[in-house]
Image (cartoon, rainbow, N blue to C red; front, side, top):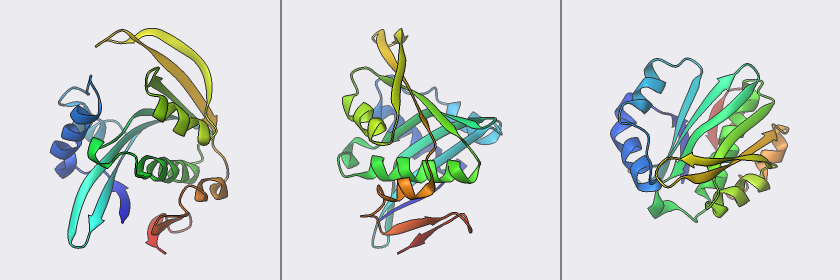
Length: 177
């Protein structure tokens, strides 16, 4: 089962490890801690894979809120847990959380070579708005700029149909089905 929750300071070591495994140019060591402790506009979440009594953090996300817009700073799934639908479920969870904060639009950058992520974002209604050449410092790769309007909550439920949880907008809680 996959459950989502707010990131906590105790998660930082695991989160940094996933970030290093998922990206060739990970965030600086203190970046996640800064976002957790100092940035009131940041929303940080993790996804935990639960197998019986064992719980393992397998996903992370940092979102910045600016008025009624959100920017995905980073979203990552541990490479050992990719291609299982976790990214789709995590993005649906994030969108549903943003609805509860009255967000109307989401923006992001994604590596041009990351076709799996681009395809996922397009399923969620993201469109390509442009590009930033030489954006990524490790290899001067182009960033694809994407955005999407936040849809109604029901739109995101289709991505959660095979999950063992729902997100209740009234209680703001993840609930098992």
